Image (cartoon, rainbow, N blue to C red; front, side, top):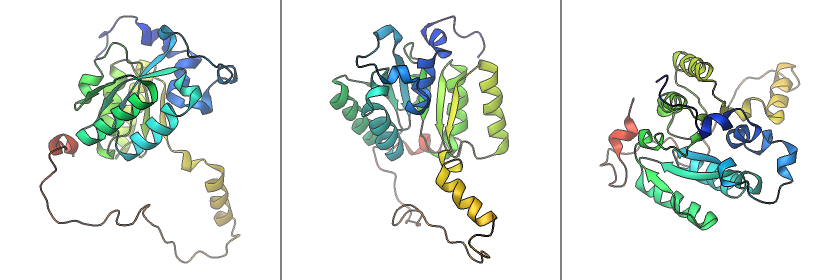
Length: 233
């Protein structure tokens, strides 16, 4: 959607260190910002939205990384939440209210969230098959993006995201920390250099009991828009 918007607040902030920090979280924030005790003026704060506030989006990104982090919280305002599950939305909106004292708008359709004039960046923490569409739509709306892994389901989708980010000059980050974390790198090097001897068997596990188990066919709960959840799937 080239030419959709004129120069606005989000465009001015896009190239600044503050704009980058809002997407990349404290690991990329300038040290000088870490020492600030007061919130930035309203017109310098970054408006962020969440597309997907299930367990990871709500517990980790929204609660632990934004609302509980004093550095991030001084520089951003959570202006909108989106999810196809009404329970997820209600719980997340309550978290924002408890931490900030502000009521936040909620959406079932991410396209309505992206229309907000006060939105500068989004976290995309949806189910995997929605990543590509929501990320591309957000960039076309002039927003910076943090998108969870796996970034896409196909190489073609990944190529389209990369091309879109380049076309719009987007600050785009995806969460593949475990591919570069020093502990994981050390484990790889130990195996590759034969320090563990011949590897004859590899066991993998899911993160929680019961995860991945088949369940009987059932009617979707009333609080979940099942068709919207399926989306491109």
